[in-house]
Amino acid sequence: MLQRLSIEWMKLKHYRTFWILSLLYMVSIFGANYIVFRVQQAIYEEKQSKGMAELVLGTPPFAFPNVWHTTTYISSFLLFLPGLLMIISVTNEYSYRTHRQNIIDGWNRREFITMKIVLAAIGALISTVFVALTALLFGFVQGEPFTTEKGIFIFYFFIQALSYSLVALLFAILFKRGGLAIGIFFLYALVLENLIAGLMNRFLDYSGRYLPLESTDNLIPFPLLENVQRKIIKAPNITALLIVSLVYLVLYYFFINRKFETDDL
Image (cartoon, rainbow, N blue to C red; front, side, top):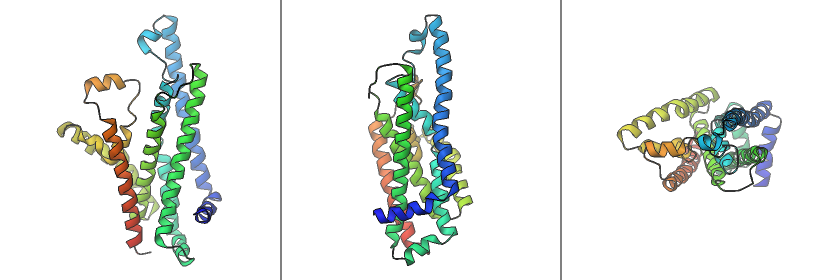
């Protein structure tokens, strides 16, 4: 396993696009949270000067324990970047025939695709750790006592990050060409699933929230209006969403393996 991972690392460490996208992703996570932090801080200070801060806004969104929820929610909008990186790295294997070379060198198909899935999991874990560190930073800056209450959102973010990466990997295996796979990935994630989910939510009793990416997205609802949303619409069952999300992860694993093992190289 470690030898296989070292080979995968050799493919990536000299790949400039990998480093550019990775750096852009990390900077974007901090930058997006910082922008929202500054906006909420300005609003909170204005209300505080009028003696209305606690009454109107409650606990600041970047103070513990809310920071776990706020930071994961904001960062979730950037999960397309690691998905993009996954597609580029896998489709490059097809473009440069390196997947064939690995098979010729003694890998079997399952070993090759398993390494890609492991890389997706490692990428999701690194993303989660960075988001957790970002939450800690803003939480301590806000000055409230540290607490792990609501820390479950960090776990939810890991599930969400892994889901996006495996969907990207699935599209890369299905379409093989980078441009096509990227286009379909963004079309599905940004437009198609949202459209289908909206129709299902309207006509089929909010069942659209159990679609593949929607199920993980709904694990981390919009934090500031969460209580209002729960009064307006039927609140999702978090346990059911988590179970459905885990089932989808198993299905991604199965279909990715099945597709690669039966495909022509």
